[in-house]
Length: 215
Image (cartoon, rainbow, N blue to C red; front, side, top):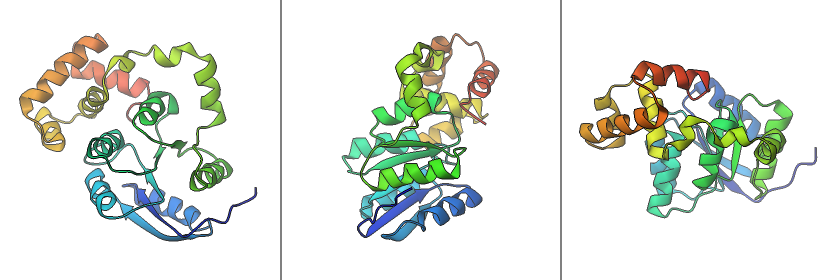
């Protein structure tokens, strides 16, 4: 593969798992031109860094200990920050990629990709291009089932709350993380159950596990 010579650049890597973060950092260090790689382990840390530092590219995990990667994308949009963000996640593309792209992401990389695929994706992103795997691009073109799953009816915030509920987080914990009232989260839960045709948190958890929304 032909590697490009990039201009001097600063990268932000947002990943809470140390081993994965160090692995991606080592791979990034093989690209010429990268001078600094900042690290964050939570969504709030990432937002604070993005507000005060200009990055060539941000690699953002979806599953963070405080707020989700989708929420980070939404807050960046709401505050008018300009930032090129690529999602780096273990979750299947079918579950989150379309939402991430709608929120402004310029790439979606699955952590289970081969080393060569990871390197190709990073090369394209650093070169100013967008990245989507060829397999997922094909599915988008030919698989109507991608838009027929029940959770696709949920808004981005509702999906985030559903995932938190499915992980077993209490309504008060979710409210604290999202900086909203407990009653607001309770309202979200009611809407989610109605849209998902579920009767309990346990059913939401079973659905989330089956469809790769949580691990």
